Every structure is written in C-alpha cells, then in structure tokens.
Length: 100
Image (cartoon, rainbow, N blue to C red; front, top):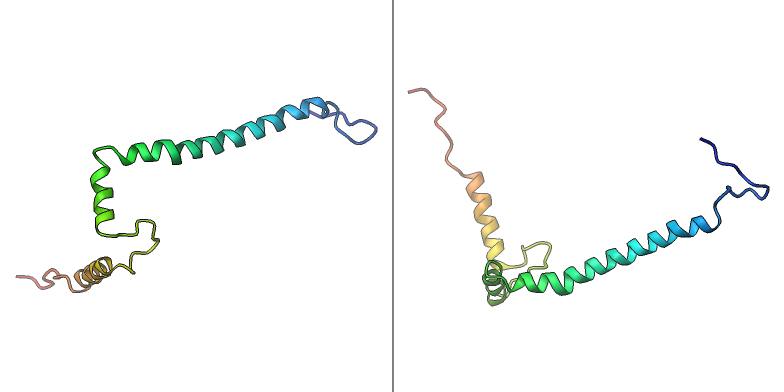
C-alpha cells in the first residue's frame, strides 16, 4: 500500500489529520503523569494505613531502618545477618559421602 506524495514532498493527508495522533500522544502523557501522581499521593498513603502494612511501617520507623537504601550493608543488623548467612552457606554440614 503506497502513500501519495505531493509536490512539496509531504505525504498526502498529513495536514490536519496529523494533529489527532499528536493530541493522543499528549493525552496519554498527561494520563500517565496523573496515574503516577495518584499512586504517589492517594493510593500509597492509603495502603500505608491498611492493617497488613501498618505494622511493618511501624517496625521500620521504630528501628530507624532506611527502607529506601539500595544496599543494607550500612545497617549493623543487616551486616551481621549477611555474615551469618554467608557462614551458614560456607560451613553447612555436608552429607556423608561414604557408604555405610
């Protein structure tokens, strides 16, 4: 299917009809921005107050845990837990290799 090209090198029908897809793109952009805003300022605070999530948030606040940290090695408890997990994996009891 070929599109006719006019004398000025512009595709036929690219005038006012081209505005509609651009308007849809802008509308989608603003819709996405609104959805992100609604999640941040409406949905997330509401979920924060639910009975399933509220105790976890209280625990995080009471223990001064930086929940936004990418790595928890700066927090002493997590550092100790990591060492314990490494030792448990490295020095775990192995199955008996000989036959009885």
